[in-house]
Length: 146
Length: 207
View 1 (cartoon, each protein chain N blue to C red):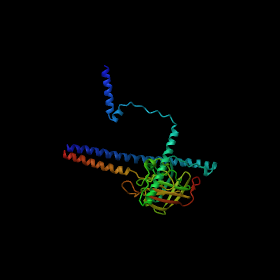
View 2 (cartoon, rainbow over the protein chains, first blue to last red; view 1 turned 120 degrees about the horizontal axis):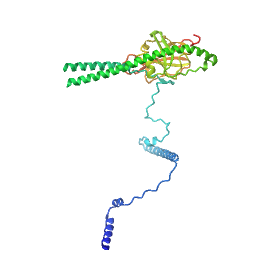
View 3 (cartoon, one colour; view 1 turned 45 degrees about the horizontal axis):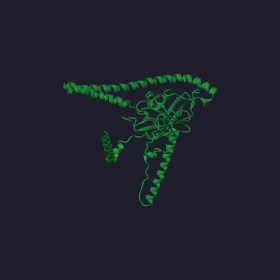
View 4 (cartoon, rainbow over the protein chains, first blue to last red; view 1 turned 60 degrees about the horizontal axis):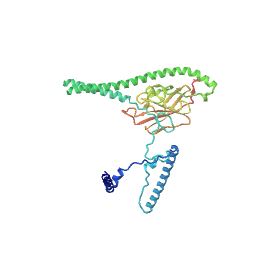
């Protein structure tokens, strides 16, 4: 009994020593990380926004410096800002790719466009008559073939 | 088999066509009924407005008379002798108003008052002869407040997205519709007629 347990323990020790590290990692127990203390969500959002803004500014400065160095070296460069960075910019800055808002045609404003007076009714009327004629033609043809 | 398919297709086409025709006919009929109703309302309003206006002027003064109107309400009578047009103008330029008659653009001045009064209508309905008007033709408007005679001073055709309506210091009347007037499909341009008042608007109570 003692011999068997000693042999088992020895075998386990040898196996453990010879097994690669990733496999050992898979049989280790999971220790959960300590829970973070609850923080004020408003403060967290403000802090995150400030950090992101600071990061953006730093990245812009670094980008500008790189552009300056490149220009001094005679290399043509274009400064690019990541999409994540532009999302943190103040909302009043217009995006160059955004489509211009079409002005309202149902209220008066200085420089407004004329109201939309297009009506689909004549199109519906004419299209309806054309469809009826086509349908009658098809029915007549069907009768002739039958 | 082929004849059967043709027959089914024919019946489907006829049904779809009849639906479209019925829808368009219903809308035209509803517009005509609404126009008649607006005219009756207008005439009733005129009788009541003359009395109310005289009382308001006596009590408050003309400057304090409210001109707030609700969408769809008849607000003016538009007469253009040259093309035989005599229509009641409704407040608003949405589908329902334009289906019944010329529409007054909300936010623009009332016809005869200081500012730019904008009236629009469908090119295939009430303004179908608007293209026959030329500079120098006359237009008459009547509202609950004043009757004014206008003379057309400018006629232009612009793209549908071109800014066309501007504030004016004095009384101005702008008539708009789609252009070309005879065009199948969504018209790409707009016909804009601008008119200036011939003489000072005459108050309704004095006319």
